[in-house]
Image (cartoon, rainbow, N blue to C red; front, side, top):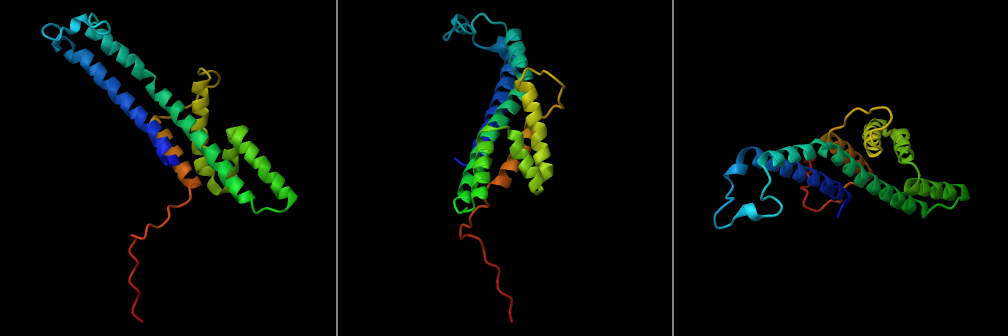
Length: 195
């Protein structure tokens, strides 16, 4: 599975949950009383939904949906952080194989240690200094919101980041880390100009 596919799985989970909760709320609000509670199936005997009022189903679905966006940002950023750490460690490790100067070797080891175990801010800072300040800052905003949510909404309130915005920013940063796709051979070669 590619890193982009890993991130997309988190997005697909969010969309499926959002749609499922929306359907459940609609079912409780509009169609609960029309279900075949009595008759051949006798749904009323079911120990999970049998005696449950439709209003309760709708209210609980709405309650669950009220925090889903925040959970999605936590999920997406957690997936993203793991992918980025892994990619940076792999890329720096591969680049360091050809190093011979002891200071460069030590710097590469330090970079691998930082990427794998220290604050994620160090990775973002290196990309900021490397000419990608705009996307690094966009990801930093998602990270701050993620951290604020993950730590019980304590401290200074952070500006809300919608799941779609978070997903797009994180995907864009991942695309920056990934090598361009190799040509498949299906590309058309432009016709040469007559001389």
